[in-house]
Image 1 (tube, one colour):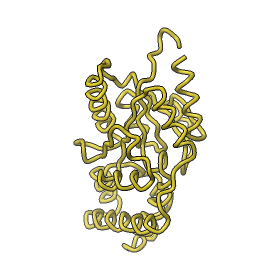
Image 2 (cartoon, rainbow, N blue to C red):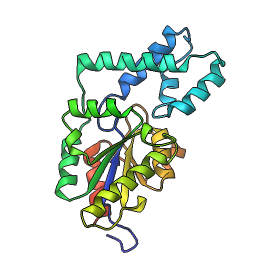
Image 3 (cartoon, one colour):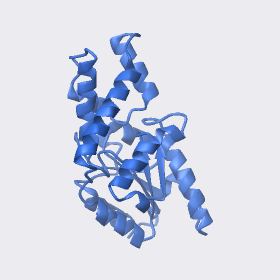
Length: 235
């Protein structure tokens, strides 16, 4: 490890599209919900654009686009209902490498957390169904903070809460400099980098463009490659 590089003591993960292979369900659900509401022009690319975007900002964006009468909350509720229905049938698929990286973090005493835009209760239920909830120290959702992704608040709060746990275990406080974030969406990446975390992208439904790559510490094919990045950083 270079004397100018701090060791990584924590890894913070987005959930949908990073830990669970569920982002594609949201993409499909948003398109269907908008079409059912009469907005046939809404596309899968539109759904990709607002991945991990907090409800407050999304509501403003769509009311500006479709008019003040647009029922964002009803459309959001319908999309969530569709996702729940489909996942109840399909179960919760997990992303490749998830067991390997969680085992690696445990073996090397590296703290972890989930930082998601999904409602807390739904996130816990989903992680539990996938059999991985007990592997995480904390789960932070947009409802824990005043502003969700792409604002830095979720990651800042997660670092603060993990630091309390680390200090209670007799370790030094954690800072953003001590952590990696693992994300798959531009909004999530903006949130993590704005909070000061070195951010790794594991692309899911889209690849990073040139501008997004400038924000990233690394781009990995899957979670097992993230292990390599951690090891190289901590040498």
